[in-house]
Length: 176
Image 1 (cartoon, rainbow, N blue to C red):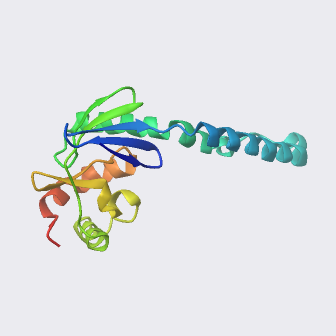
Image 2 (image 1 turned 90 degrees about the vertical axis):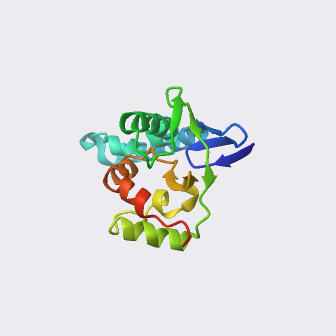
Image 3 (image 1 turned 120 degrees about the horizontal axis):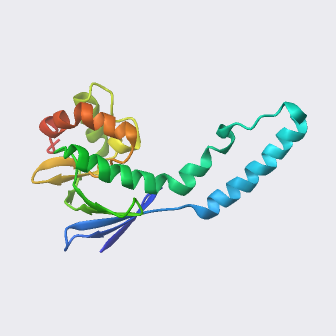
């Protein structure tokens, strides 16, 4: 068993079983600290602006990410796989309301990072490869010799997969 820690997920990889279990990370302490820091900040705003202050939800934008991002991305990943069954996706077999997912495990992509980014950018006409999802080969694996993505809960990543997933699957050369 291997353990991998991401920003929003903790992944337990069981190569012998051919599965990975992706647990959503909930950053309760960071959310608590951020909340009180923001309350102090908002208190200063209220004092300064007096009655002209209206609370803007953007003042609280960090809380959904700290508390729910891993859950939302796990659930989105599961739903996207079952909705599209796209061949570029590493299968997500099960999700328990986004709290944890069970996903197929394959051979990790060991293509050198710069070479990987250059190929992805070329295949996608420079539309992918600039964020961590498509610039890091560690987010990909090879299943039966085909490149597959296993971190695809992000909306922008899903859009890129819809637009270029088949082309990446067909044109990516693992030997470079």
